[in-house]
Image (cartoon, rainbow, N blue to C red; front, side, top):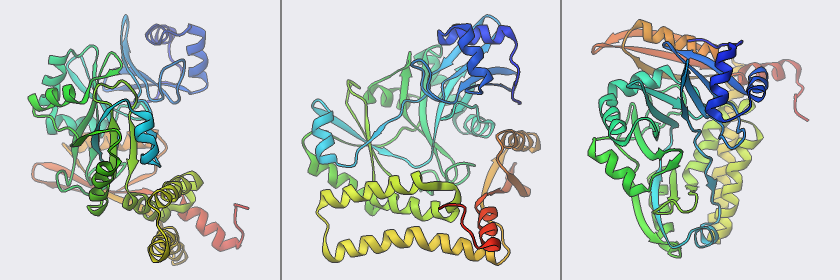
Length: 390
């Protein structure tokens, strides 16, 4: 499972045909690494690092000599900050309100009867592919077979604590779960009711539908969001029942502030865009709800603490001689699968260290640490007393 830095001429030809692009354009994209070629367990594929000619970022092409399968990139969803304005303005009549789960986006495709898990960035993740195969491979395979594997792609969220990317605890999937939120046919999403029918028929979990509302019923929408906020859930995605217009998303205040609290542990990496985007959401939420006085003071205090406290704790750790890292545990079928994952992360330039691996319940459980650059940058500031940022 390696990068192909110099794709052969026939590979460029096949991908050019698959994407409907001139051969010269594909060659240029490959030379700039906008189009990356890789091998995965005997399969060749290419993926786009950014949108090109109508193809979304993360579009992947799995191919061989004389054949290809395009896995369209997942389209970005615009974010609401003022639901009272956006809902009646954007949608046509009724809306479907679905829960937005906090994990990572994975498209599942069936190629030669093999389940492949494609990440948002267009890479086939070996860990996610293997874990999904063990968890619900037969059910996903049956669903896609019945729908038509040549032109259907399932898109969903991986949640739980046992993954290398985004970890939040969910009681319905504490370790590892997959919930379908879209099924694409020929690159177009099916209506939510058709997605649910297909998923439920084959026992594949899908995201919860929290309500079907009139677009003008903003108060009912706010009640849904308030309940999720109290429960510490991420938010919602709002869709037209027939996908006549694109969906919109909205996150809860607890998630906005919680993300800041988590992200600021590694404040030299998350950056300005991470922090400001979440503050922006809170600005307009406070404005829309007319928050003032003591309640505004409480929100400001919570927001300030979320940004400052974990960052100061990180500086104290580094000053005390400790490294800064994320620690997590993953499940593998065996040592070969573990080594495949470690090689994959290394090929992406991600510094992951294996702390411990142990046999437990017929599987291999591995405790890992993802080393963060923040500790190096903070150490340099502590040594020089000078900030790299003006």
